[in-house]
Length: 81
Image (cartoon, helix red, strand yellow):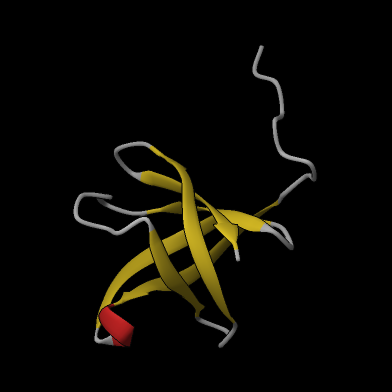
């Protein structure tokens, strides 16, 4: 059984967003699968080539500075800084 390692529970969600790199000149579409005040789980077609720090721009206009906590082939867990 998997044990929850985060200090707070994230709420499941299905929201559109973009990962912005190169000072916003490059973006990659993603889906926010869960979200809390301190982090999120992002789903992409591929995580190849993404840096360990970037800005997450939600479709509703909110932005978050992020650092990668973990990743798989299609998911990235991030902490907000």
